Image (tube, rainbow, N blue to C red):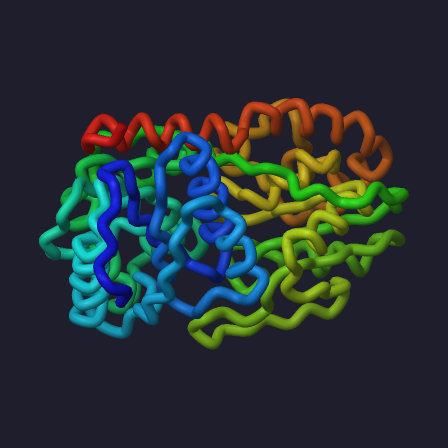
Length: 360
C-alpha cells in the first residue's frame, strides 16, 4: 500500500480488472473524470496491468495506479478471501482519503467499513451469466459468489447498470432494487487509414463460453473471406479454448486493435451473455458493419443499426448480408455509436456519485 496522501474530497477510488473490457471502461472513466477536475485512484485486482496498460494509465492526468494483488470477485477461492479483499480495499480508500468509491463488482463491497459512499457498477455477475449461458441450478462455487454480490448490491449507496436490459436481468436474480442506467462510452483509438478488405472480425474474451465464439469458428469454415479473432484464449481460472478456422490475432494493444477495426468490414458478436459490449461500440465507431446476437441488451443499444442473429443457423446468412452491403450497415452503426460517448458516460456516472457523495 502507498503512504498516505492527502487528497481533495473530489477524488474517487475506482476498482478495476486488467483482464477484459472493464479495464477499457475504467481508463476512459478516469480520463473523463480528470477533464472535470475529479482525480482518481485506480486499484487493479487480479492479474497485474501489462506495460501498455500502465502506459495508458500514466497518460491520464492525475491518475494514481495501485496494483493490489487482490483476487477478483470471480477468482477469489473462498468467501473469506473475498472478504479480506474488501477490507483491504476499504483500507486503501481510507489511506488515500477519497470522497467516493466506485466498485466494478458489487461483491467487493463486503462487510467492510468504507470511509466514503459506495457506487457499484453491475458490469456482469456469475448468476446472470449462468442464467443466460447454462441455466438450471448453479454450482456451489457460484452460489456463494451470488450471495456476496447480492449483499454488495444492498450495501452500496447507488447501483449502476450499463443497459436497462442488464438491470432487468439483475432484478430477475436478486429482486427489485433501484438501479440507475448509464450507458458505457468509448473513444475510438486513432489509426492510420488503410484500405478495408472484405473480412469479418470479432474481439473479446475468446475463452468465455458466454461469447459463443464457437459459432463464428464454424461459420468461418463456410466463408470465402478471412474471419479473425482478437483476444485471449485462456482465462485467469485456467480455462482454455481452441478454434479450428478462425485467424487468431492474440491479445492486441488498443492501437493494434484499432488498426484491425479500420481494416475489415464486418464485426460480429454472437454472445449469449453481453451486458454491454465495448468491442462492439469500438467497431461501430471505426465504421464497421455489425452482426450481433439477438439479445435484449444488443437490441436496446443497436436496434435498427445492426443485423441480428437468433440462432447459429442464422449466422452465415447474416454475415453474407453484411458483407454484401457493408457501407450501408456501417453508416447506421457509426451514427448510433455517436450516442455512446465517454462524455455522456462520465456525466451520467458523476451525477450518480454526486447524488450520494459530496463531490464538487
